Length: 142
Ligand code: DQA
Image (cartoon, rainbow, N blue to C red; front, top):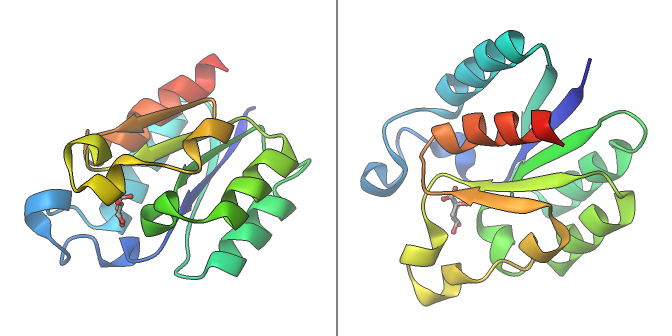
C-alpha cells in the first residue's frame, strides 16, 4: 500500500476563519476528513499534519525518508521564500507534489513564485480543498 505524508504549513490551522473569500469555509479538519475518505477509496495510507514552524516542517520532511512513498505539501507562505524547505525536499528524494487552495498565479505578485515547485514533480493549485484530492490522485499515478 502506498504511504503518503501530507504536510501543511503556517496559518492553515486557521482555515474556515481566515480570509474565507480566498480560502473558502472548509476547515483543515474538514479537508483532512475528505482526504482520508478518498485515500480509503484509492487504497492508500495517508498521514496529515500541520505546523506553523519551518524547522518542524523540515524535521517532518527529513524523517519521511524510507517511510513514505510520496509527499504532498502545502508550504503556505513558506512557498515563496523557504530555501530551507526546498533543500529538504530535494535532499530526501521522495517524489513531492506541491498544493495550494488558491491559484497563487492569479494573486499578488509575491505569491506568483514558488521556490519549492522546481524540486517537486508538479504543482496543483486553485481548487480549494479539492487541490488535495487531485494531488492524491496524481500521487497514485507516480
Ligand atoms: C496558500 C497560498 C499562500 O500564498 C499563502 O501564504 C497560504 C495559503 C494556499 O493554499 O492557497 O498560506 O498556500
